[in-house]
Length: 413
Ligand code: SF4
Image (cartoon, rainbow, N blue to C red; front, side, top):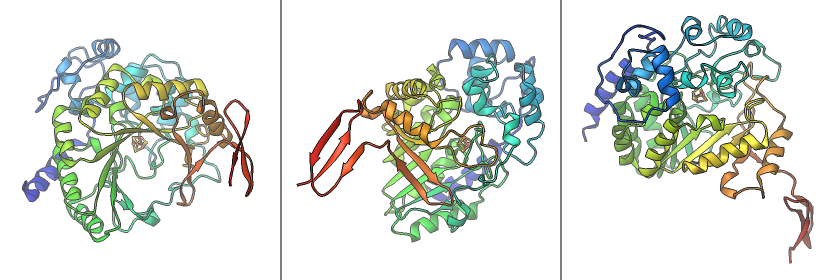
């Protein structure tokens, strides 16, 4: 492979790809786009109904083209009003987003929310409400202090043997509770020399055996850009595993094309960390995308943020975890919501998270139970939390309480 050619093509094409405004408004009469790659994917009845209603002259091929989905993402209140009735709280919030995390919703994801009530869990994920404008004393724009752990642009080196590499600030949908809301959605792109500095940093730090490629959402980049990034990381001998953190199968499943998986699988062992927040996200399209990833050998894990009114109870969380396992995604972390500005309406108590873990452990398969963590404010890293199962522990014995409340003893000698 010629890395230089690859790199030039990748950067040229990337600049044409992301962050473009909508070129077909919902309800517009006509618009069919040329495409390099049209995957044959299933379209659920719900998506078909939505497309027929709001994009009547858009073909199935265009709908299934991830670039069409990105180009036609809903980013303004006028576009959103054409497909759904908004509450006063939503209108006020969207009109006051200047300088804050932008709003962006793919047509595919819009098809999941356009006829929902104001408090629908998926709707709350992407449509801001006025509470987002309220900031409290404990909230910070960079609660995990990622900036102070960043030796070169794009790299966060917090833990001894691994780094985070934020390769883009663009996502196809912006989650209203995003930890990186201070940086994502901004036009702060990595240039060619930034990428080179990041690769050099990883190459110079022999202790780095694991690189997490994140963002923004890395899978909003072109295939060529991803190939270039992965090629340059994989050729560093001491890097053992590469991970990609993405929400794409949930918000833009059309992106998981055969061409993409063909590129990604050149760089095994490659893990994919997904991000789910509610069982209703697991649609036929999403399941198909995850199946394609699993069939190509990528171990899939899921991270979920605990969100008030969205997933903060045992039945919803259990349903989500079970549905994830059915599509071969292993629940990995359940996060206490980070203290980002305007997140008060999303945050639950820590006690609520412990209650949910207690309601899962013993009542369902261990595989269905994520590790509940707080990503410590100030950059302390992830700290796991467990319900209190230890009743007494000394040099002689440990007394434990099982999931039914029954006491059990295990000798230390
Ligand atoms: S996809 Fe990830 S990076 Fe993008 S807005 Fe959502 S949480 Fe933030």
